[in-house]
Image (tube, one colour):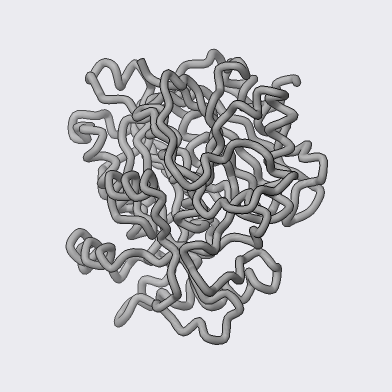
Length: 418
């Protein structure tokens, strides 16, 4: 396939040196990672609002510990000027920076950027009014660029700073753009990622009308079933993730610990249907092939795929078909898993979390499972790492997929750092 995406000249790796995560499984990367490897579910009956009139009554709520952390780490003056999504990604960025050991005050601020992905709906949530005096800050609170702006202001970064909205692929698009800015030599360091807080009554009702969400309310922990025969949709969650990306040279010069190296990406838009890929999965196939070609990564080098895996009947089937078309018989020997089975769908934050998990997988050589996989589907017949983590050896490359409502597709290739 010809190279159709805009690409920088040359192809240098970009290092992942810091990770910060907040989602239903925890408020720090080590806790979230341990819970994922254990196959723990963060889905529960909704208590943050009355979901009694909703068809779907379960969701991925943030742990109570988050609100304690938020109170501790968010100045009062900042609280009234921000919505929950901005506060979450700000805290993720603080963890990612600390994890990277980057000395911000010793880094050229004009060579540091911030790119954050979000669906955009989180900044105008009727459930996030902000309390007394918040109305005077309504414009500042609800700017789409606010999540990125607060991170830049807080760290004194004076390079490019903006938000990207590409639906469910927003986090991946943000990471891809940060990759480009580093490769083009515009910046040396970027904080990139995604965030969304869409677990509201309004969004549940909308999701149910579109038949996107699972209605298996009986046992919330078993509701999301990617690639399983009895899957019936995903569950909305709140959460986000920030990563520190650096040029490989910049990371090596300061002896930074590197989780993995990002080698490239591919993205495209499908025009078949707003909700579903075409039955032949051509758009998913094209996206993955572009990522492999643009990154210069041989297909035989890839052993793990962090799947989009939403538990949607058609999309899981299409993703499986796309992987078979791209990798041929090798697809049967590859390991594929979906973290959405444990954390639900954080929309703009989901693919950023999955990017970080892919980097952690290459670093630790451990793969989180796809939980709730019980009933094989003849149309989904690959190895989805069912129910228990997998320990691997010498896996050198992995792909993380994002395929979303609205037709925004992105696949990113990472390789193991030596």
